[in-house]
Image 1 (cartoon, rainbow, N blue to C red):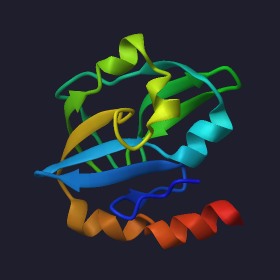
Image 2: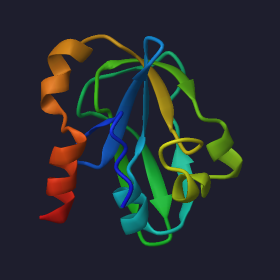
Image 3: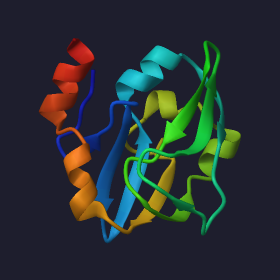
Length: 127
């Protein structure tokens, strides 16, 4: 299972990576493996705001439909429009081309303590 060192993780199996003042968010390799073939992703509207832990969309796979939860609070800056026509990219590249949204973080410094390091996430998924 791939767990990049440059990301932080949630118990709901989302990852977040800070880059150029934005937070890039997606689902983990573990999550996409558990879901199976991803067939649809409901993306949030641009400019909407999310709070840490709130649902911001859904991901639908052959096996199940699951909510997507915001690892941090902020404003939706960008959605991955590639997922509209090719949601399966999440299965192939969950940490690169399969990102879901980019958020302008509002409280990242205080909210980081609610996220897991790669080592903590590895232990969490191994339990």
